[in-house]
Length: 226
Image (cartoon, rainbow, N blue to C red; front, side, top):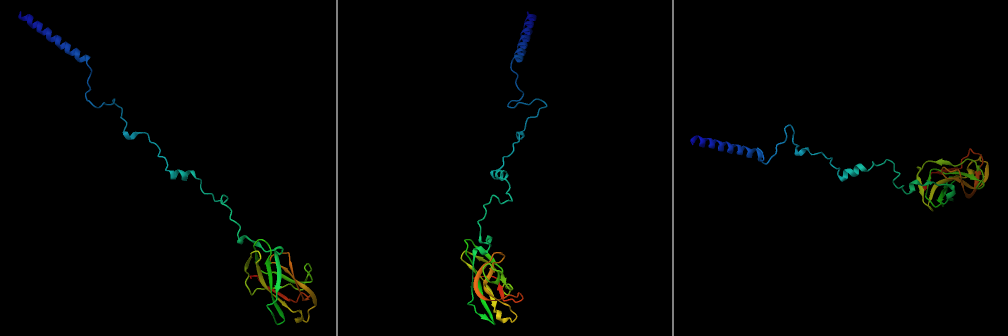
């Protein structure tokens, strides 16, 4: 009986071991470490900083600075300045009135007078320099004798004449009787050319002239503001 019991025990032990192996094989496999999953061999997990780079959008001030074109050197977009007195034209005979004032008196056979030019136009104009003055028999007649010589004792000024304003210059007339060799001719007045103008004005003032051009009866100064 004893050998049979031994045989039966071995059978039972063998069966229990076999059953345990079967249960182990059929059950779910447990990971060696819980809470983490190891990557496959040879692969490198991405770093949190390895995210794709994105370009930083420009600040509003930078965007506006880039989108705006450079300032042009041309001033075409700037409103044109309004005309000023500095842009006024030279005074012309067509916009002037002429007169003389001989209340200044005389000396040594000469008469000193003011030649007065008044702006009769609607816009300001410049009066600068010396007028051309000659004795003549009428407004459109030819000059008699020598024209007025320039008296440079007074500096030239740029006189701006607003409408209705005047500029003056000293005009000296020497009596023709002071010159024994004077060939006298009757003059009706002065023919006056404004500075840098080819048109003339006439001021009536009867006097004696010398027809010989070598005798200078007239002198004229530069215009000044009145």
